[in-house]
Image (cartoon, rainbow, N blue to C red; front, side):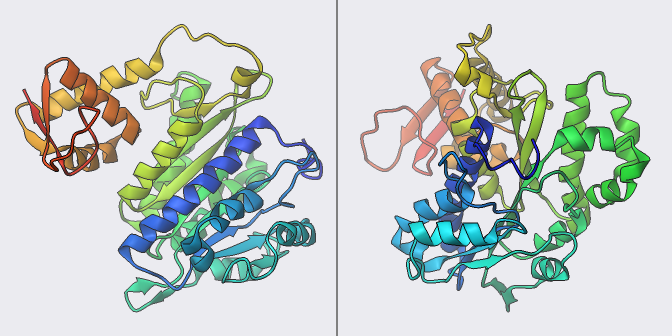
Length: 381
């Protein structure tokens, strides 16, 4: 599919991708505002598109703004910054048709700059938006280029230095995977893997199959941010399968410095994944449009397998201990892909099996045995 025809008809995968980002941002804003109330909270899309596909389906800018419009706080705080070299005028027209000027306190900004060439884009990403200790414009950046030419990891990592800044990065693995072995793309790959390119090329040769090699590439890309920033970074991938075969098409990679963003994105991913996967260090949250088109029966109940695996990990880590459900979750979830709902199910199952006792301290009658809350105390046997 060429760049010019991409916005003709929205695929199922594109719809899921847009929904992941549009559902994440409002909750991200609420998390930010609990820590500090900034002047504005920005959503920046560097490849925004026209906002509406020719088949009438809405893409990320309109979907996200529609959700924000329904919340008085978000209408007052969010600031949309949309860039697209080809579709700016169309996007602006479509946006204001849905949201007339004045709908949002902060007037949306529309630009048609070429990412990777226009220095104003680089300057924007590198700008320090702090006033004193506080970031007055924390930003969720969505970068979905057609390929990988505009991805400069060092610049994106510098953008992450501002408190609260996060990234959703579209990763076209179909192009990156072969480009790693093609000298013609050396400069582009160096921009993508500025500190680990040589090691990535060596390590991928020792992986047994394509799935392991792709997982290595995604993992190394995430670790680039940790190395450049010299701090803990949580990076979480969501995989999309091809529309017509079982190969991997692309990923969305979410990058944050805070464990609460890591918690949130895993729950969002849980809501949109439709393929059961075991979190074994290679597989991750996955969407396959073929599951929608055809009735596919999975041979194994991977959801239950993940819950049982998590149960065993919790029993091993917390045997004989007493801790609140929230403290356990905050401590343990930082190290794995399990979402909040996985923990709730695993802990409730342990109570049912008699291997865990739960007690609520809020004097409220609850219908479930465990809630991820400071009021839910857990005692492991």
